[in-house]
Structure formats: structure tokens, C-alpha cells
Amino acid sequence: MAISEMCSAENIMGSKLMIAVKMPSKDEPLLKEDTPEPSKQTKGSSLKQILVALSANWGTINTGLVFGYTAVSLPQLMLATSRIPIDRHQASWIASVSTIGTPCGCILASYFTDLLGRKKTLIALQLPAIVGWLMVGSATTVQWIYVGRLLVGLSSGMIGSPSRVYTSEVSQPHLRGVLSAFASVGTSLGVMLEYLIGSVLDWDTLAFFNATMPAIALVLAFFIPESPSWLISSKNDENRCRASLRRVRDSKCDVDTEVNDLLMFSRADESTSFKEKVRLICRPSAYKPFVIVSIYFLLSQFSGLNVVTFYAVDVIRDSGSTIDKYVATVVLGIIRLVFTVIGCMMMWRLGRKPLSYISSVGCGISMLCFAGYMYQNVAWKAAGQSASATWFPIMSLFVFYACSTIGYLIVPWVMIGEVFPRQIRGMLGGVATCVGHFSIFIVLQTYPLLQELVSKPGTFAVYGVVSILSTIFFYYFCPETKNKTLQEIEESFHNKKKLKRPVVLNVNATDCTASVQCNNNKKLAFPDIVFNLPKRKASVIV
Image (cartoon, rainbow, N blue to C red; front, side):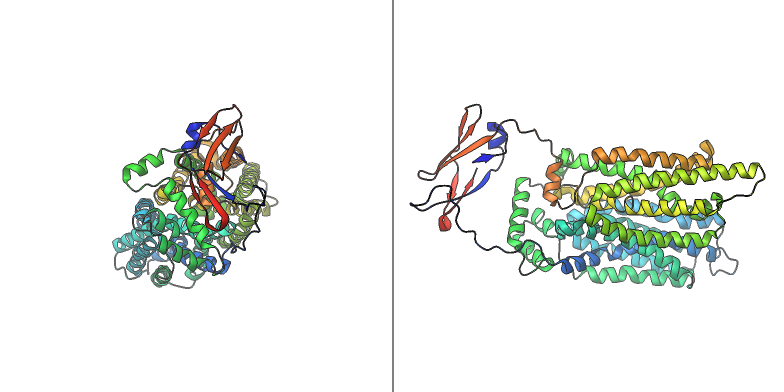
């Protein structure tokens, strides 16, 4: 029979060649197939996988709460009648101190996710968030607010990697994309909750309310099973792995095949020591996806995504639109939540690359339109004329936010849980999450500098050009992981040579010998072939 492998002794002997052949009776020809036995279904319960993913990603709501808290609390704290009055300098520290804890949380998560396991890490990281919000709510000095914000930022940084890695490892390929996007939905939901509830609650009462979200996430994390992939790779525990899969699949689902696949993939490349993990990082299957994800983060952030998020009020005010800037900010929050959900459904249908194209092209065109109106508005003011079509810049901004949410806010974060090798998925996932947050920091820090160099309209024009040019990167380098297993994704990053000659495996069922016949007439013998013959079937393992 023909086998698609390179015809060289090194490649054949260095790999595991698995072929199933059937042993015929005396009166049957050698290649006649027996009647296939009924097999279990391969797709598990979608409901179980959705519930487990929701439980694992509930803590991501806290990330949105951290982002949105200062927008509604700082105006209250800066009032003269506030229980803890603060000045502008202290307000800036309250807003930014959480970003100090976030990268630290990313690094810690990368270590604990592989060391302790996905489930224990998800449990442990909720504790700083609960303590932090309680400290903010009961604070008597501004220093207590600083410490509380640092802790909640630490927790929000830790949640990014383990929640996505865990979700990708317990979900099947046909559901993995939409379930991995639950983290982005949770963040957007947290922002919306903070804007809505913060409009009716005081800043301290709001902090106590925020503490309930990680508390719920803590309780839910106790009821989810450990990642079956981690149980195999780190613990080599086949029984617990099978039990974990049965909890997130279905009684009719063939979990044994999935366990065997995990075992085979794990034994093909076992690694536990730190030295071995460093060696794995140097492999193409590790550094290639890491570079791709890191560049994706930088390009998506330099489209102006979080500039609009963090400076929404100022951007809307400077655009020339006559709509109330605070109302427009609330509408932006609604758009973020709605289109995050739409993006999850589109990812399930279309995949990762099409959503990246929608974001790059849509954000680029809408941002250039926005910058063009700002240029024209400056000209109108210089000529003493009143602005016209004042609805245009805000509509451009709404389109920009919708397009950016569909791809930029979802795809790179989903890829974190998909594209890295199993043994170092937690470590590289945490580092990649840190890169994502550091990209936000870089863009926010360079935003004022760009305004000084190329003016405000020019800054948004730069963002638009970068976004359109990023389409080229997505086309050539962004991997499409839709409906692929994690093993298939990892193997796709290995350096592989193209097939040059076909190989023919000759199996002699009489004397249990085998040889490989190549097109160049070279023959390779395999004396270590093992034949197992249960029920007239034979497995040939080279």
C-alpha cells in the first residue's frame, strides 16, 4: 500500500509508522476488508463543554471590572465631599497601578499553569481579586486603594492564559474557537456591568459588588475537572485523564480514542525538566507561533483599538461630533459587548483568518475616514465655518469599534490557547498574554507623542494605515486553526520537507516480515515490527 512519507531511512526509522491491516481467511483475497464494527460517536456533549468553559472563564469578568472601574469611580473620588478625597495625581495612580500588577500576573500564571495545573491555578488566582476589591471598598486611605488595585490587576493578568489554555484543552475542535472566545466576552461583559452598575452605586459599594464576581468564579472552579491534556503530559495519569474527558464529553462519546491520541502525542515528545522546556522553546513549533501572536498583538493595538477605549471621551470630543460624549461612550461599551458575541459566532462559522481580515480592512478604512473628517473639521474651524455631517465621525468610530471587536479583540487571545506546544502551553501562554498587555502599554504611551509629531488627525491616519497593511501579515503568517486538533496545530509549525517519492510498504502475513520499497529501488527491512492478531486483525508498528 502507498504511504505518504519521505523515502529515507532516517525519516522512516525516526518516526512511528502505524498501519492497520486485516488478516483474511484462506478463501479470501489479501486486500478484502472485513465488515466494519460499530464505533462510538466522536463528538461529545456540546452543553457539557459550554458549561465547563463558562465556569473556567467566569473570572475574566473581573478583567472588565478592572478596566471600567476608574471611569465611574474617579469622578466620585475627586469630589470635595468624597470619603477619601483625591487630587488628579492620585487619580492617575489609581487608574494606572493595576497595569503594574497585570504583567506580573501574566508571568506568574505562565509558571503556575504548568506546575500546579490549570484547575488549581484558576482557583488560586481568584483570591487576590477578592482581597483586592474588599480592600478598595473598605479603604480609609488612598494607599489602601493603591494596594487593592494592584491586587485586582495582578489577578486580571493571571486569568488570561489559564482560562484560555484550559478551555482549548477540554473542548473539541468544532467548539474550541467559540468557547475560547468566552474570555473576550467575559471582559466585555465586565466593562458593561461596571458602566451600568457604577452609574447607580457609590465607588466603595461598587468595589464590594465587584468582589462577588471572582468569588463566584472561585466556587465554579472547584466543580470543573482538571485538564485531560495536563494530566497526561505532566502527571502521566491515564485514569484521571479518562475520567476528566468523560465529565466533559458524553457517555456515547469515544473517549478511549482521545485518551490514546493524547498518550501517543505525549510519549512522542515527553518533557518535564526546565532544561527540556528551554529546548522546546527553541523548536519551530514554539517560537514560530509565539512570534506570530506577538506581532498580531502589536498590529492590532497600533490600529488604535485601546486608544479609543481609554481616551473615548477625549476622542469623541475632538472628532467634531455633536453627540453627547458620555452617551457615546456608553454606546461604545454596548457595541463592544454585542460584537464580541457576534465575533464568537462568526469565528465558529468562518475561522480565524477571515475575522482578522474584517478587522484589518474595516478598522483601516473607518479610521482613515475618521481622520479625514478631523482634518476637514480643523479646516472648517480655521475658515470660521460651522461643521456639517457631524454624525459622520461618530458613525466611523462605531464602525471601527465593531470591526476591531470582531477580530482584534478575540482572535489573538483565542490563539494563545491553541498554537503553543502542550508541554509549554501554560508558560508561553502567560508570556504571550504579557506581550498583549505590554502592547497596550506601548500604544497608550506613544499616543501623546504621535499627536505632537503628526497632529491628532495624523495620528488616527497612522493607525488606519497600519491596520490596512496588517492584512498582508495575516494573509501570509496567521494560521487557520478552525476544526483542527491541538496536535495538528502543533505539528503544522514543524519544519517539514515536501514529499518527493512515494513509499510502498510490503507486509508478508505468512512469516510476519515487512520491508519498504522506494522508487529508487532501495529496500529497507524492519526486523522489529510487532504483530498483534486479535480477532483476525493485525497492527503493524514500526
